[in-house]
Image 1 (cartoon, rainbow, N blue to C red):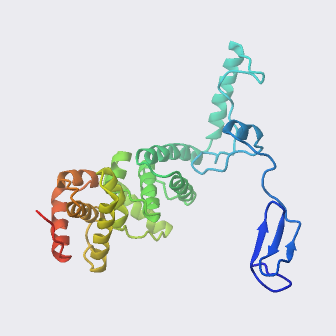
Image 2 (cartoon, rainbow, N blue to C red):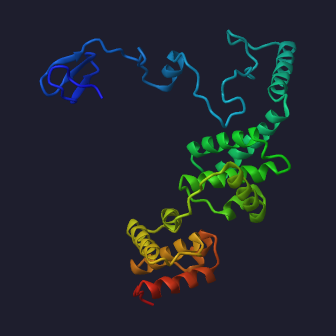
Image 3 (cartoon, rainbow, N blue to C red):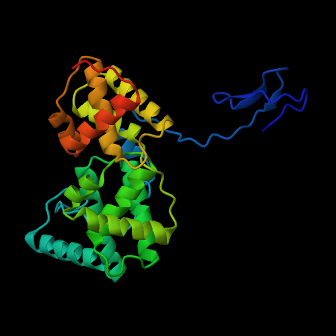
Length: 300
């Protein structure tokens, strides 16, 4: 950290407009020739930004060539905006076709082309944030480089990697949802997930039922008070060791069900079970356990 050469204070503030760094303690101008690394132009809408920007889009692992290649335009017009003749248009389409073929010439690139398309499809179906999709794409590329996908379904590896990333970043998605989105069985995805975690030496945190509360409450149209009460119930259950060996979705669903009853926002066990992807029997069992062990007085 920079210090004032006069008084030794570390309270240095920067005036970006003047390009000066000043000591707040004694007022000494420490630096008066700061460099401005920002752009020298301004834009007031997206059209101006695209027109004036001189750099391309950022690198994206979810794109086959990381977004660092150019593509031939398919609009069928020349630089002046005039329409191409039918002969020129046919020639242009042939160039586009061979350009695409050349971009996926190796087996690894063909694998990535299929996998990244599947990754975007599953992530869109499950409404997974873009930052997590990027992390999943990077992890898939590492998996390919290590040769861990040989003999395994691409769809199973994609689903397992997405499940791993979601658990790592505390964005709850269940194996049931992954199976529904990918069209595979829970057994296949779970087996691939365990294999990847073992081979990549990943430390995946245990799923905390609290992370499911906002999602379940939102889908059931419950208030913020119900969400907060549900978190408190689960926190008490964790402190007393009541969730060990229990499925996190079942515990979260039961906590939401109890919180709704306590705040007069009753939802049936069938409705909660449908949202959580568990059976009514599971919710009923977890409900009885939490009610008894935490001494919760729920009106019938």
